[in-house]
Length: 546
Image (cartoon, rainbow, N blue to C red):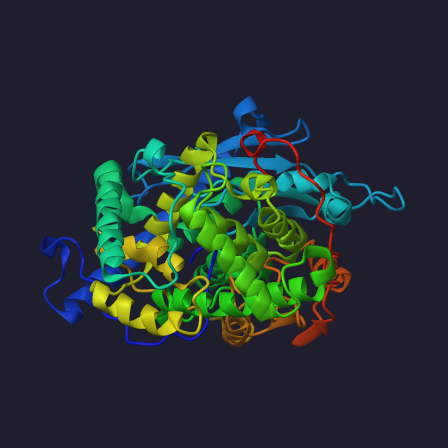
């Protein structure tokens, strides 16, 4: 998933074949036997790696300047097996960050007993969590930071953790670029050829190591990190894709779970990983895009983009058409516009900025739009690394349709009712149709009664990146879990956010282990306040990145 995923997919799923026939077992029974044998070897390998990590620990010290972290955060390196079936073989480094528990209640100044490490994964795949310990300085996190060491890490492949790359970052950003919502046959052929070349580049650059970048290995890495931190049981906060790592962890290592928060949950049903979840995500983004347009229409007096959602869409389409003819500042075309507006579908605190940019552009000032949407060469390497890891994990995790005709059929149908995100999502994921590494079968995530301590699921009803049915499915599969729902809201990622009710449930759970029965709900957080577009006189080319 782009950040995760979910909802109902139209069409059937065709199974992609492994890249090498020599690695393909001759029969279904032989395939099962091979998978079971490897799974047993990987389980033994994980136990060996965790025992070794518990003995070695992590040598934390000052973070390097390249990490851009404050002095309150310390950094270290953990080495994990590239292949858990061969734990004494090649090991790769994972970078880890930590802020130590303050031990002092921020309100009373009284001493607070330490509860261990709270490990975070912010999602992705392909996103680093190294900045998580900085939340110890945020007002909403101080009570948690008093009791817990806040621990972040860069998962395998990300940043300096055995980084993956599939193409020269200097060629990765290709803006300004088009973004047709109903692409022609010629565009589809061109994008399919580009996706095939990208997949080929992943294999050429990573070699045989490519197959080992998977969600299952991310879960195994998490258990080795737990052991290296000296924790007998894990306290974990996973957001978006991080919830899938947590769900796999809870299935593989239930006795190692202390407390676990699933924030904006991916639908973990095996048949949804990952093709169907991405179709679902595209459908859900259409609804969230409608929420944004409805909010803008309510504030027509501020932005002048139309007093109905349909009129706002017309204004947006006018911007797209003009950018297709003449990119803003020579940098922002329809693709860059779409990427900026997609953030508004993730987070409603972006709504005033994005509406302001559209309004200013139509009034003759492209500056705010360029500021919010232009690509920056200095970020190209990080962006390419993020996409390489994202694709490696999701393409390796599960079978994908190998025939573009299946993608074309399903997404042409979907784009008739959900044009906003559908084809852009296809182009992001299409290298999986041509993936050269072997595919895994997704693990059947579940935990029976008494297998886990209580766990906490947080979800917004109108979240598009991880639609609400994913939270319901995870809740059904994990006995003893509690689901907290933010009603009639859609921002992605609730932990420590704007909803005080959700934050209270989160804090009570992490500090005291209390959950609100099976289900609880919170009223939505307030919608953002509109901001009046101000004049923007400085040159568009001079604007820094947001």
